[in-house]
Amino acid sequence: MNRSDLGRWLGRILLLSLIVLAAIQTWYLCWVVYWKWHNPAQTAFMRHAQERLVARNPSAHLTQQWVAYGRISGNLKRAVVAAEDARFLEHEGVDWEAMQKAYEQNLRRGRAAHGGSTISQQLAKNLFLSAHRTYWRKAQELLITWMVEAVWNKRRILEVYLNVVEWGDGVFGAQAAARHYFGVDAAALSPEQAAQMAAMLPAPRIFDHHREAPFLHQRSDSILRELPAAQIP
Image (cartoon, rainbow, N blue to C red; front, side, top):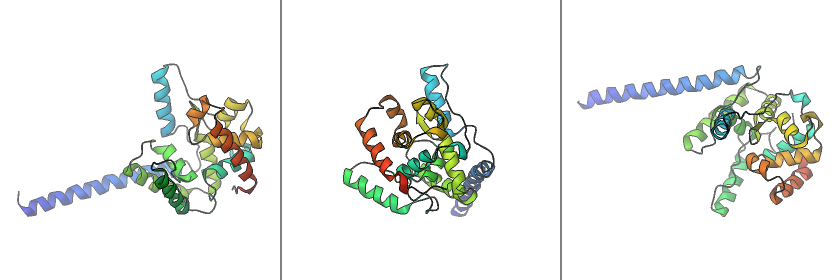
């Protein structure tokens, strides 16, 4: 094969790769547009959790019940924003300032303890991707995040996030979590209960089985102090 033939083959491979990449992004965008008006029945994280639970117990199942934005306690909305994304209403999907701070903290610690991901980024990951940390997954997460921010408003983003985020071992969404931990509906969560639920989000499966962990109580108290200042849509 001469150089001319090699160049043509490489050009075709590059063109095919671009077509496949564009098709993948179009598939994601179609779902994002559809979910602007329709509630997701299942997410990638839910599928992974179901597979994990069934591997341990074939009869196991997830608990999740969708509730409208207005039926979720304002305490929980503020607590989650305070805990996960204080600049939620200000950024356009990525909080570069928070990412820089997280990078500096991780550098000092010598390990990746903080990610600086916004609620929109976490939602993109939950809906479509996995928890595995790779450069490709992070790049795809950013692309989906910008799609979500372009198509949905902040109220819809927070509504979907609160309904699909993992909140325990097989527990997804605010309603199932409120029932699981406190025996109340998501609309009835007190500030203290909301702060505790928000504090669990970095490691919900761990805290589900260690609800008296000192870190959880310290983090809950910190979120409770920040609650009045949290801005929600």
